[in-house]
Amino acid sequence: MVSYSSPPLPPRAGIGLKPEHYRAVLDSAADGLWLEVHPENYMVEGGPRLAWLEAIRQLRPISLHGVGASLGGPDPFDPDHLRALKRLVDRYQPALVSEHVAWSAAGGRYFADLFPLPRTDEALCWLANRIDAFQSALGRQILVENPSIYLPIKSEMDEPDFLVELCQRTGCGLLLDVNNVYVSANNTGFDAGIYVDAIPGHLIGEIHLAGHEADAKKGRSLLIDTHGAPVAEPVWVLYRRLIDRVGSRPTLIERDANIPTFEELMGERAQADQVLQRELELA
Amino acid sequence: MTVQLAFFYDAFLDAVVGGDPRALGTCLEDRSAADNALVYRNTVFRGAADALSTAYPAVVRLAGSAYFESVAIAYVSAEPPQRRSLVGYGETFPEFLEAAPGVDQAPYMPDAARLDRAWLGAHRAADANALAAPELTAVPPDRLADLYLRLHPSVRIVELGWTVHEAWKANRDAAGREKEAREVCRGRQSVLLWRAGHEVASQALTSAEAAFFRALQEKRPLGAAVAEALAISEHFNTSLVFAGALEAGVFDASQPELDQKREEWW
Image 1 (cartoon, one colour):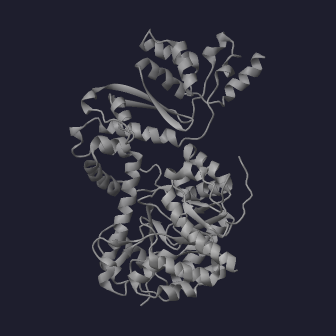
Image 2 (cartoon, one colour):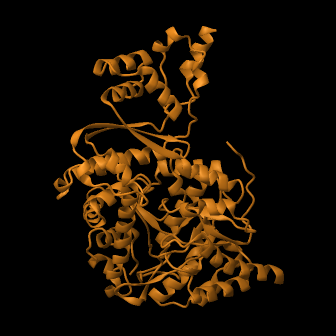
Image 3 (tube, rainbow over the protein chains, first blue to last red):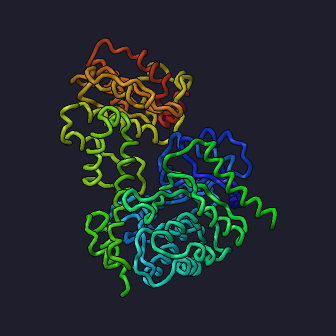
């Protein structure tokens, strides 16, 4: 087994790695490029997927962005999932491991979606204990991502306060998805700018940018975080505002549907990288 | 009123899985927003159905996406995902297809699904190098029959009731030419699938060849496997089949028994 040193991600822009782009990524000379994958897609015994990831990992840092842990869910952690995740962490030595402030399994059924939670003291306590246990099981810090919200759930605190408190209780960091902030603000009626300003910069370990689409029935009053379109202009505006304040952070262009060509995706990546590079020059 | 977590889980699942948003409404600032739970309901279904169509591409093409979608809806509600990864979801889909309404229009479909399932199994099986022919040159000819040879971990042997292998192969990828289903007829067919390098290969077997590989898969020695094959057909050409399999990479490079015996022979 190859062993790597595991440096942190550069404060540059990366892309979500898609099988369609394996060859192009391997051949790419792009400076500072890093890759992110959902570990669940690599929970196989062997074969080409793992081999591609291995080849790419030898050239580039990677981040594992989990969707199956169900940190906020009612079921105990799935031992098979944890074991498989740990095996991937050991093999690929990712610079970062992240998960979601959400739940995705209940009663032995896996939903492969990110379900929301009420922001209450009870939920905060439950999540904090689970993140703590998850970090202990993995033996490392994780980042947790803010969800995209489609339901105005009765809550006791604002999301920034909820997330900051989670970090303070568990030592985890934040993966701030700026598109999720925009979508949630649109859907539940808060000010996305105030939200973004309220997140302490030192807690942010990574940023996500993705595209959203209007709901087919409800139109723009309900935006869906589809990862199926380019990053929208107002999300870029929020992103620049964030980077101006906190400085450069590793930033991922996420695309999981309507996968564009590698060149197109790298064009979007260059846009984010420009914002980061300009900030690095200023700093 | 504070939303209790246990109540919320149940209310949310009632809405998303059960399609009843009433309890969820009581957890919201605005009850009328409860129908937004449809977003989750769609995503949950779409995720599982997409995983199914990724796992069964030949069935999608042979059955047509409209029919596939209707069976997928039924399958996802009858046997929803349990493992925390959708890779490999749909393990029981071929058997489910057997009883699906309308499948009698194309009764070979479950067999095509069995081949898709075996393809995926071979594709993501554990890594191993293939046994190279020179490894066997040290074996004294009179000892070959006693030898137990391990197959590559990706090897799958599929038994079919329809001769669907050619049509399946032609429909595996979008670039393939769609074969007329009339080339498929009722009749036993055995297919060997294995991964050579990064590619999954497949080959239809004669009954004798199938018996030979099955015996090896059941961890029986080479001599017994040959005897099984010869009992079915006296035309079974042992050296040709064996050399072909070796060349194709069907045997595992790691052969603990061979290593052990080699020491004995020396």
